[in-house]
Length: 283
Ligand code: PEP
Ligand code: MG
Image 1 (cartoon, rainbow, N blue to C red):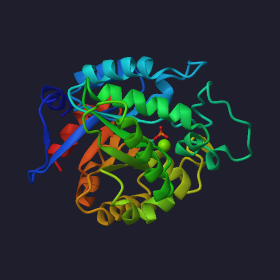
Image 2: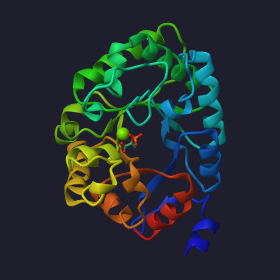
Image 3: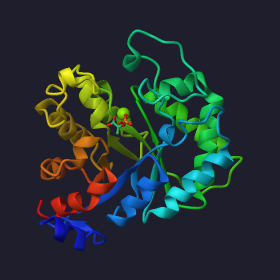
Image 4: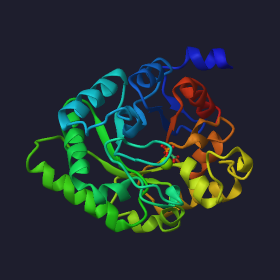
């Protein structure tokens, strides 16, 4: 089967009932993009920008970022979903220092940090707009909890559009905070797409640290509560594309269920793209 998956890696993934599912690669480096392309990735459903620049001691300029993002886009056949900075305890950004707190996973990370450092955020948004004129991009916001956060970010993008002439960039959010999943319908008017981050969604829903082996059984991403939230999110957002980019998307035993819920795009670990495409074909 894995031989067949490889022979068909570059073909589209279509279910037995004729639904076309886009399968992208999760990218944290140029090498990930290149590997994903070999395995047949159709773009990327998540580019983890904070990992690309995890060694930067000063904030990279828009031009510096755009160069890196463009190279990634050009390595892949399809749009890249640039996730804005998601600094967290397990992936800090040295140029955005933070004070130690008792519960970092529940503190300032993702878009929460951007509200405190809007200039850093603006520079990244500029970079994303610059990249858009060179390669197809989408913009994705991490750790969104309230509609207000998306409206704020959209406002900044609109402002920057007055300075930078760029093609249309779809704006979406990660659904990885349980409150945002439960109230997914509230976001219908402010996002062009959503992508479910099952790594964090599981950690927060199951109250089980994603990096702590002692609770790894509780943190299974195919737990009924997580599958329910994926189904709920799809139901709450008719007409809006729902992707999954957390690790659950890289589990071929979950593929048919995710598609059954209405998920239309999967973004997976680069080496497993061809295998997930094959799992789509038998779904
Ligand atoms: C997730 O939370 O599922 C996700 C894709 O983002 P990250 O793993 O980078 O937090
Ligand atoms: Mg996450």
